[in-house]
Image 1 (cartoon, rainbow, N blue to C red):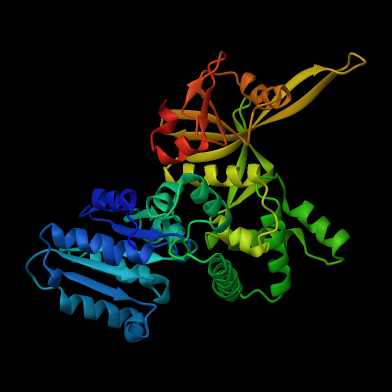
Image 2 (image 1 turned 60 degrees about the vertical axis):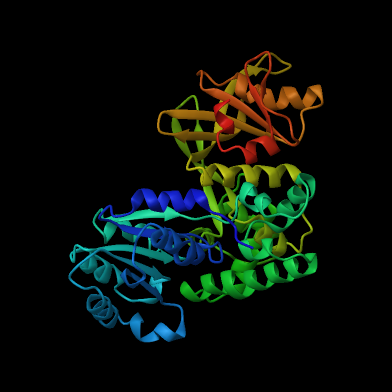
Length: 417
């Protein structure tokens, strides 16, 4: 089974021969190596690149252990690249090589080599693109399968695919399993023995129990505003454990650097400023999140919200959580302030969308609750409500666009209605 990842292939094609180091990042097991060594390599071959001009090095393989030495790796590549013609270097899991930034910068000075690298840790990759590559790094972020990618190879109808995706997520390996027990066991195993172990070892965390419980807390509260102080209080009151704010904040950063979670800032729409407190957290793959909780907490609204958030990132949008202060009168006539929330403030260049994610809006109470935030936004950018189901986009009397989840996920231009 081959899953086409045309969007990411196109992003690589657009960057081909641009004189920069293409850095492909993303969570482990999301398909970075397959994209580079199978899909992109095939594109190069089909478009006239000679096989001898494609250099492939997977640094996580034992067969390339000696090439983890930066000088040995540079010497090998230099000897492989001849004077004539264009060469393409595909370098996998570059964080296995110390001083990789120096090696890659030196390669660019050769002039006839186009460089593509992958890695699984943003701390060593994304931040160093700016600081070490001096503007010569070009990041391409890869995510687990979008629902559209997942559905394109799913053996079943939409409803079954949607239920499967909400439970088991979009890691490519999981999409190939037919047995639910196999999916669950795989996700539990790689979370404990790959993702969490990787974070603990890389950051030399002494108390593995703490960060394990922290993951459970964040998994239980996807889409809910929280902060390290609140989490520390939970540890103290419910588990009688001392887990400091500073340590919690660091551990959350480690999880984000490994691409396991995303931190989402809160943005005051009327005040046009960011609010530092009470961020929201979403999981990069819901299957991993659900496996961590033994598939017990399946709240459809929060899961939908997480899926919409991930889909917006996949499409290249910048995403924040919006807040709006509104004022009214209490029963005694006193002026009171109430803070309303917009699930997502979505930006891309000059475009902006405000999005609410709702499981259903069948009741008057639910419509009032969800629409009220959008009504109080003091600008004319498009306001969108995504609901569970298969409805095509339509506009209500207030001009709000209402889109069914199926249409939103399966149409890349769905926000442009």
